[in-house]
Image (cartoon, rainbow, N blue to C red; front, side, top):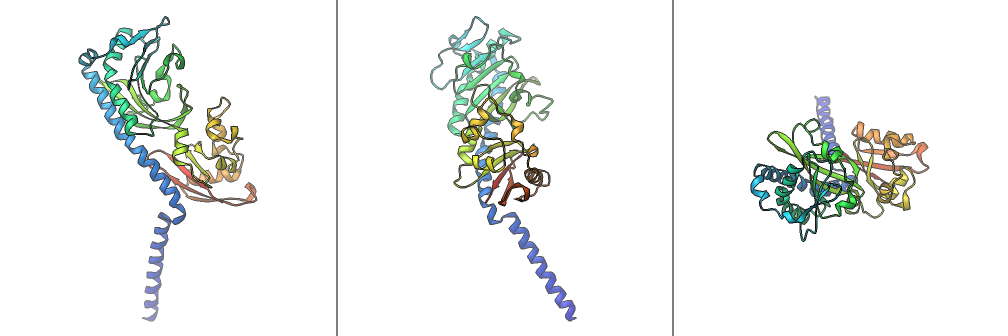
Length: 336
């Protein structure tokens, strides 16, 4: 009886210790900063999803009532260059810029599309009021029209024969890559053809009569991600995508991870430069065995803690990791 009593006591102790350990593992104090940053990132990105759902629904409504909305357009604002590019001239106030590539397959239809999609302008301008993290909103169509806000000099930024459907912010929303026909985060950052550097985009297809007509997009710049979420004194932080590519990071973290030298010690300036190669910033391809082991632990094994040391450095660095739920990204803190 005595032995059964002590067995019961030890069983209860083991149970409660196990519960305590599990609970501390979920919310340990050392992860408080990472958890708070992940929360801030996602709390500011989630509203983009609701917004783009509303924008795409409105665009589909315009397609269904195109005759009515075409009549309300400021048709005198749209001109055509000698090279066959249609654009908006002298738009005043909160209006979008318009670009129609000279490779558009149906000029009469695309001109009419320019007219009835003008109703998107007020919705586009409101996006930047409601969502400060968004740097740009646009609608690209299969007829090669781009309606984009805020305004930019489309004739100097875009090539006359630009094919809008060849960019991932268009084709990743098509029927093959997005059969659900819903919003989609582009987890791979890309170089913006409008010249704003590296971009994170949320896209949503627009359908009419069961056919893909175009894609709505909301953009966030990598520069804004860094300044908004990774600017912590004495913290060495990096955002990594599910392929191990560094999406954003502080210069100290980049240096510790032994990635290629940075241009003027700034990651943003490096990725904006012509000689930047994305594969150079893939942690799975690091020259360091320890870094490769670390990123494998975090992404493949779903671990959340790793000690960088051994052959890697004379100093041990405790790396902590938290995944994001909204996007397949990982936030890593390279501690001291």
